[in-house]
Image 1 (tube, rainbow, N blue to C red):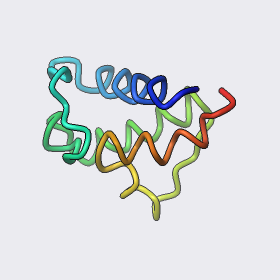
Image 2: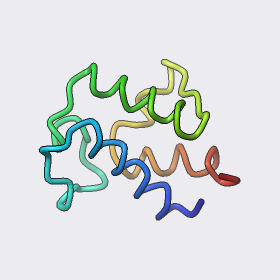
Image 3: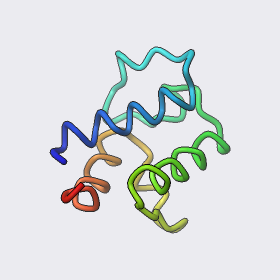
Length: 83
């Protein structure tokens, strides 16, 4: 996957978890939780979806890598390179 594909995948997962949120104006560097109205359980759902859809395990110690859209893409791109 390209970084753009990874970005789209992350946004698709967020859209499935928070379907009423408008994700079109997401600032890539700002925290996703505030922008998309996500709570802690939603965040865990994102991690679980990454595991379910792409077999990617995100250790709890690395959750901070998923704070913003850009940091998520940078963290996930190497893990999703061959998907």
